[in-house]
Image (cartoon, rainbow, N blue to C red; front, side):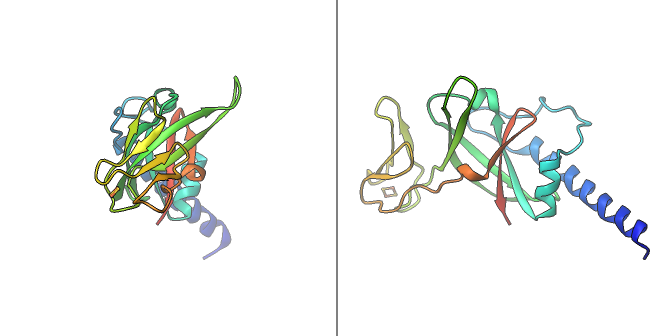
Length: 175
Ligand code: FES
């Protein structure tokens, strides 16, 4: 195969993978709200981030619209991870929180909502600024560190794996 033909086929493969990721963006579900369904134009081309993720074999979940998740308090979201072919690869409940640094910038704090004791779903307690597990009473602070046992391990941290894309907050996970 000559190099022009090989280059063409490689690019075409990435575009197909990227297009499947666009389907991902349309099918994930948030508990707080239904993200993305009508927000992205139907003929939207996959973004470079989506194409890169597909090329690395990563799974992507859409967490919701940035403007809806941009709250002071954590928002509970169900992240549905899809592979580059649009197949579901599992889901997980997570808490999303926007921490404002100054007028223009901030950062996303994304923590697993699964208690590290025996896997119950934790709840956020407004006012107390902590997560509480309804099963055996473990408590975690807003950074996911254990405040009260029986849990001994902090909540899973996904903050580094999130990215904004076309007004949506998304999360990538290795396959
Ligand atoms: S499952 Fe959360 S404290 Fe036991």
